[in-house]
Length: 180
Image (tube, rainbow, N blue to C red; front, side, top):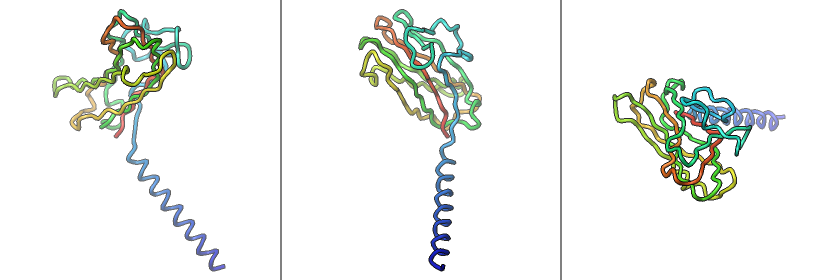
């Protein structure tokens, strides 16, 4: 009887400790979604949806398409105040389809600080991570942000086709999350 009572107290104590540690770990991982698009809906995109294609899609029917003649793709703009906190890091993820190895595309994340400080610009060259062609490849990147950003600063996301004479690129299920 004494062993059972002690074992029950020990299990309860360890369970409470584990829950406390889990709550502490999760509290430091606050995040919010700034941009999320599977391109089935195009609300929030600045340009009309001429960039949508049904030629290749990772999910659904549509994907973001950068053709050979386009240097700068459609933009998505949202203020940092879309998060309940000012993010200190961004987590960019999505899927990319290169029909061939002859593609040059960069995902660009820029923070417009409205002249208060130099804008933040981070390019993610897809050529360095996409090594398989004719299939959808997942891409991910962390972006560190300066500590002096304000909720009124704006995140701008777009695709830059640095060499427009290369083949087309397709993107789908893009997500940009802010992390505390």
